[in-house]
Length: 284
Image 1 (cartoon, one colour):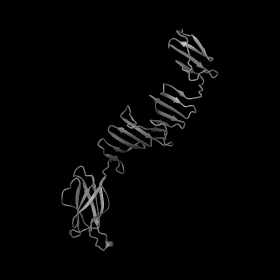
Image 2 (image 1 turned 120 degrees about the horizontal axis):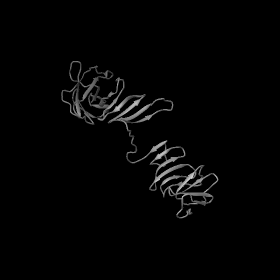
Image 3 (image 1 turned 60 degrees about the horizontal axis):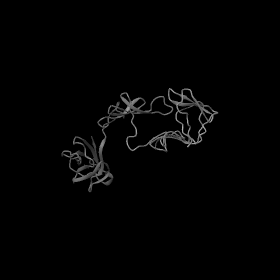
Image 4 (image 1 turned 120 degrees about the vertical axis):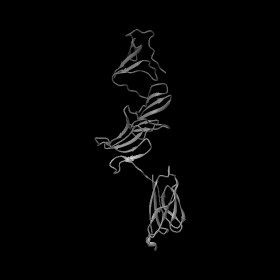
């Protein structure tokens, strides 16, 4: 390794010439400084320079540029990447396509972040931290995702259209006139109650029990948090099967449990009867 050897105990303004480059000692900073123009060069191959190097024009390097002992900044010879390392491990890379990778050395997008824990914090000094998405023809924010207090909000066109509040409630404006809590269907079922009960399709329903003629129990896969839910439904007969179109649906006269509720079907006279088409749903 070739090194530049500077004189011992220099005085302010002392000069030292190496390879056509003049170094001047600055006693106020205790550093040797040089100004390189386009006609000067450093005749080094793997040399070591201690001090400040000032380049007024440009510095051409045929090889990699590295700062630090196995870490720091590294720019490769053909300009395809810039990489930043700490303690010998690459932490960030900017590739020739302008894609920046944090924790990954082959970024697949303009910004690619990879980690095994929380990979990003968005923190504002004001009351809310937001991420804005905008297309290249828009004069305003198309979509804003932000947090205010314990809420996660969604805005489009400058107006809030959705929110998760601190209690986990989903709120949105879908014809309500304002952002309001959405109460979703927690379970539903469509089944044939005639003869052997058979479920056509369902959601969050594990099974339907047959308690007798026109009497059924709907069992939920995931229980409700309490018994204060609302169960609704309807029933009818498929007249193409030859049965009369008797209709009649009511909730069974037993208390709800968190995991089941009872329903009954009857004809127009109120007599219990099995129906071919029975639908029920739970809201909470």
